[in-house]
Length: 382
Image 1 (spheres, rainbow, N blue to C red):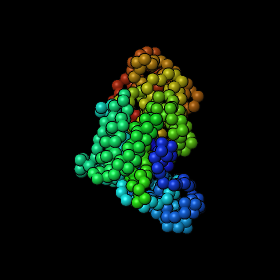
Image 2 (image 1 turned 120 degrees about the vertical axis):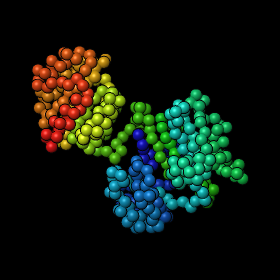
Image 3 (image 1 turned 90 degrees about the vertical axis):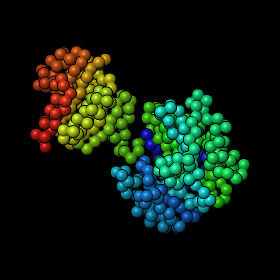
């Protein structure tokens, strides 16, 4: 889960890494007041979770408070790849002598953190790595030992370059160590400072920052688990799904999908797309009981775009009869407008089939046939 730049900078500041003076604002008048308090030229930075803000014109500069208000009014409300700009970071504009890149990511191939450093900051590190890999230092860190002082200094010397004074190396060493402490303490999958600026006054400052929290560790990071470009209702639903161990992703189609197992759910989406269907969501419910399947149907009931729901039940530890009872409960209590197609196989299959047939739902055993049936039913209702 990505977090906003202002949140990253708050975490960096708590760890002792210097950041520019700044204020978070939500309207143009507040931007003007913030620029007045900062007392000089400012940068206005749209707070979005999607990168490439500069290329999209979502970072602007202002020399006066009045100009800051004007630029803020133009930025607020803009769309950035579907994300609406609702807040800005008004930040003092610094005079720079150089820009570096410093980041930490999880190297999943080798199951360890990886320090990434480059003397060319302010550019997309992915592109730089492809064009000239030698310009990036990759420093693996042992999860057991953590970042050693020698590794922190190695990264710092690489960043400082040849001929740099020991004072700069010492300062960069502190920054590398502090960044790693934030990475570990906040359960991050990615943390980058780009650029890590060297000011004309000789300071090392985190000019921009990005981070992503491990979704499975959010229960340990309650301060970071809150709405991000979502309505309160969307956030509450996402939190509920996470607590249940469900994985949900909304799509733009009209066939709802309720399935158990990420792999088979992806296969359903592939089959549906291949045969002309339009899935409305990805929902992997993992283990589910009678109440759980009842609750999952609420997602579809509240979505007017959904014309058909395809339920895939492949029961192992759970039971077809329990899940069929949950479907029966929902249909009898809510009488939804959408049509229902059920694929059912596995533990207590015959018992589950009997329960559904008693309420007029005939389960299909073969997955491909169930997907095709869902598409046919939906096409008849368009």
